[in-house]
Image (cartoon, rainbow, N blue to C red; front, side, top):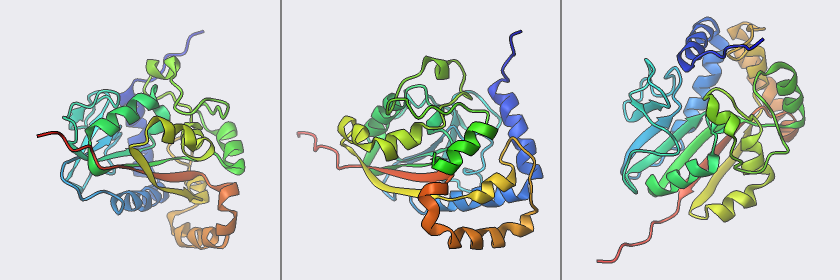
Length: 254
């Protein structure tokens, strides 16, 4: 029996309901949005969020243009990450929050990023990270595929069929396990920062697909516990922050 997958807008509708009912989830994403915002480049150009989903990051940030691969109530533009409709060097920032691991052709996206970013412009991403603990948890409780044997920046025809399909391991492979492959393919995109985010609290928040397990009032104690466990972050991290910066563009001849 064939199961019909929800459309993008149906999927986002379920995310809205989760967002509205889980204050701990909102608090955690607010923290991640703050990490992203403080890493945005101040060079001239437009700032786009790709795959903006229900619009949490762009809300209250008028300098950010929210985009998605299809028309949604929260996107200002329809933009495909493999074909960004801006001139060379016209973009200051590309923000991706839980998006890179959904890309059918991450290498094509990075090629477009290298093209459209101004010198000093940045790609700023928050993505899942596959530590020993989170890999077990993602495989047991998360609906997205996890294939740590995939090649860095591997293209996937299966992901092209649905914007909500994913390989949750792709950010870990491309930027932590095999980063030399990205450096060789895109030397103009310098890795400015790679940071592991423990976020055990995210598991307890229920994420977008499960029930919240603790009240939002547990936020501060949970953050205190995470600080105590900081030396174990490589073993138990669930998220990561990745910042790529465009190296100076070649000066065009007069």
